[in-house]
Length: 100
Image (cartoon, rainbow, N blue to C red; front, side):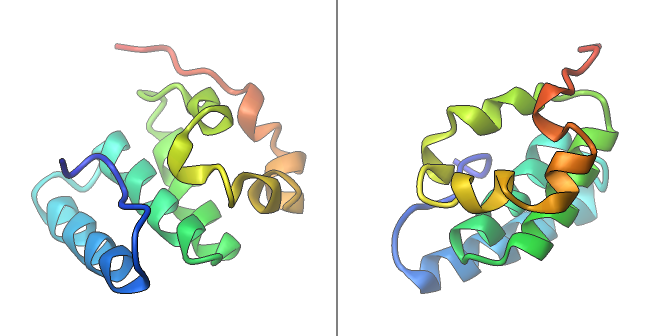
């Protein structure tokens, strides 16, 4: 499923990021694809890139970002992400969408 980042090998994670970028060519503001790209980068321990994609997902205001707290794909990366100053400054996890 395209909306789920793989938790397997590094090559699979890179392939997932490439697939999500192709999906963005079809729908550049897809909140789930933007979120999944953030997840793929978080799995690669790239907090900066993860934050950029997760911030774009958040900016759509179409996705409940509190899912970060329970996303199994982020279980190992969550501590790194939530300790990032960008997340803390923007109260990232407290922002809920106004689902449309």
